Length: 418
Image (tube, rainbow, N blue to C red; front, side):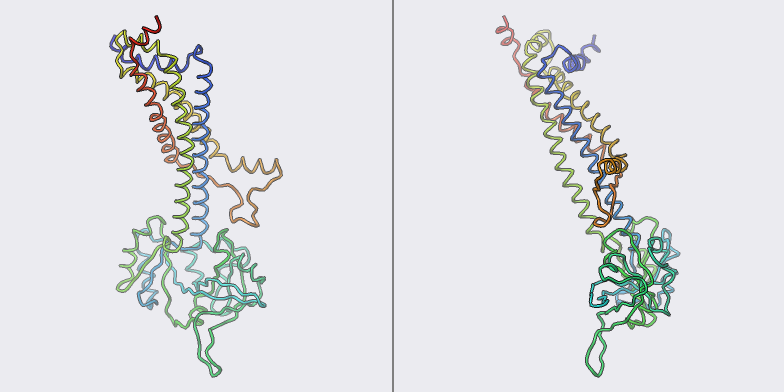
């Protein structure tokens, strides 16, 4: 008997929700509430998954060229960099270290001038810290040596200049030299020996020259600006900076990839949060449709409530009946939405490709966008948070009409019924 009494709110709530004899209009409103929740939940899961995909694509492409950490000296130049390189490579979690020099330059070719960032590297050591060698369109990274003054240029930057592999372009450095004719910036003609493409903004602003060539042009002698470091876990880079400085010794300074690229990924993260909040508002609107559904259900079931109260059912159990009804509607909508969202997020890329081919459209033109497809990375945490927030909003929406049902006075209802 106690079991039957305790399960009564659940049984009655489910009966009110699933009964075919209920008011047809209320059934339509309930269906609309479930549909709204399903669409809102599915949309949020798909959008968050696509944003995860874009962030992952950008991170992978940019960090294919940008190492995870940089170690230098507070004087601006690192003298005994060979010893520091060996010390760094002995650290646990460090996959490699490579020397570098970097400078902003102007590139000039037949009247066209473009600003760029030039990094002087050791081609052999660089392959330990970046994946530039795997993104070469023309030439090889190993072609960089100290004898030919060659340069490897990003594909978009080279196209903007109008130059091609084999052309000799002039690099103008921000260092000055004094001559009898006056003061002039350092400049040197380099032969384009290759082009790379990672599918990110770096294609339009980055170039590489040999370390020896950079030392000659910049006048640093045997010194370098620092060492580029690759870790086994890029997200651990901020926490590993202390170990990297300690390995190099007194006066060492270190920074990680978030210093130069972190603002981009923070912007993506903030955009993801804002879009999530906006779509959560859509779920909130759909969830609060439950208010109207339950309010009409309470008005329809006033007689039933009065009878149940006279039979000894407490006001708390009356509240529970309509909470069960509201959460059943919400649970059905959220379950359908989560299932649909997971399926769409998992197959959105091939689905988009199929639609493009069927309709003859092209969503992302590879001539305009770095990423020519729709990437998607489904995160179980995003799905769980979306469903939990939708359930909480639905519970809040169901609470008020359920409480109103518990305040119905049985004597007043039965008096007017008689």
